[in-house]
Length: 100
Image 1 (cartoon, one colour):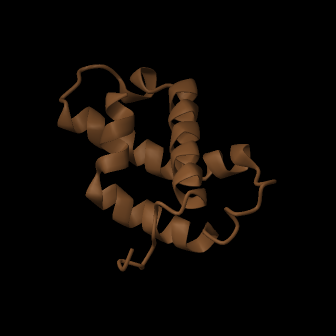
Image 2 (tube, one colour):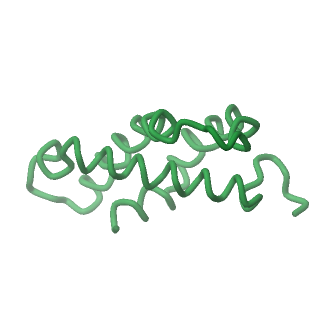
């Protein structure tokens, strides 16, 4: 949960990954048949970078690839995908629209 929140709230990660990605796919989100697994895999670059940054910030001694194994990273991707799909479908995330 700490890593998920760290990634979700990290301003630079958000700017580098979330804004461009959400801008690109926000119109596709309304499709009820959206492939959530494919959408989840799209978050892997952000998760990889977020795990690395978290590892450095917390000064952890373990190997980051062992600490954040493939399953952990996939779970983080799924959680991010679910978060953004829900926010976008509920009209709670506005890219470039600050009037709401």
